[in-house]
Image (cartoon, rainbow, N blue to C red; front, top):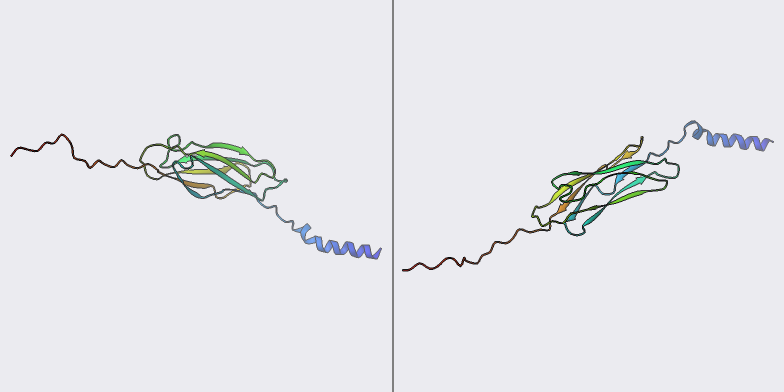
Length: 158
């Protein structure tokens, strides 16, 4: 009987600090995989945009996220396809990915950019990083002016 009492007291001494100060649950963090990226206008035509969860397991309730694109010098529908998606994660899901299409045009326009924004409406979820700037590197070149003389000119008489 004495051994059981000593064991119980020893166990209580070991567990007491944890019972009095429970370890706080790890906060769920979600963030865009890249904070910035550059894409050549025609290679490839689609970009995989991903965001990653950490401290997410079977005990975590579903998390609502929203990802949108915001025009910069590049415009949705002209230079890329817009994103405006809401997703709810399931248990053990550690990433969400979505294709975004870069539109290959024939315009000479230089490097353009747009921003991807990630938000969550689930209380207590930390979103970091929440934005990413994507640069579209133009693959079009201005035409080279012709250097041949005009055939409409004729020599003047002397």
